Length: 333
Image 1 (spheres, one colour):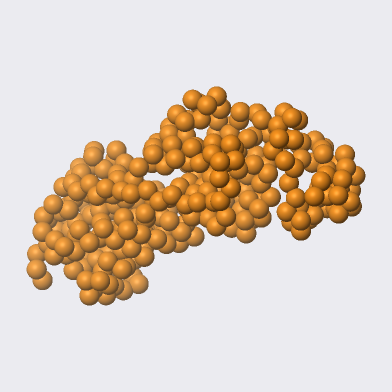
Image 2 (cartoon, rainbow, N blue to C red):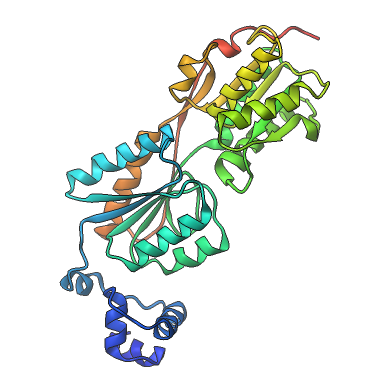
């Protein structure tokens, strides 16, 4: 289908179609007609034609969930290393863990001239789905799996299973869990599933009250740990979905007069620098965040070069870093 045929199918002029695909002004009514026709026909102008119209900008949009996140910083470092070597500049935006802002930034990058987008994602809503469908440039998702897109992920399920199994293998039998929203399929759902399957494989049951949901903050981990420790139930270890939560749990245990690891063990995921400087160094799972950024940038470059049109998901490996917080064997009860 050429542009003339597409314009006829959309019920708009050829010039309106041209302006739409070259980021010129198009009325909202015509924009809706064109987007409906794209949805129906799958039409897209050729890359060569777009390049002739100076579509190549050497700009890549990068959406991150949190400026202060160590994992995000490592990922952006990897992205920048690869793309800067190829003459690209990054347009970095921070969503502050607000899904609405993520959608706004995706819309912004869709409407303005960037060559591609790398999205460090946490949740996907129907609004995310709608705008991702309409993206006219390659998009790479980091940290989550998303059907139909190139993705770089960590093995969250296996990481959680491995960390929990470490404590179970040391004789622990009374687990508690502090996680995050299950809307986050990686850090929330997959890590919880890994934890639950590890205890199930060891014949251990857990009550709903033994599992707490927190925000991605140390203070939230501290509060949720206090809820567990003041519940009247007995625990010999707490598995936390992130290092921040684990650090908060460590503080709560100290305040409640519990020694770590003598009385209770704690482990997290992420292997941030925080794990090495807490009063008791924390056992954690090391994810290769910088490598994730490098791989995501390379995926984007491959898409821009049209080396592959088939979306793929790359799942990176991990290492378990055992530290003092899980060193002692649990007492047999």
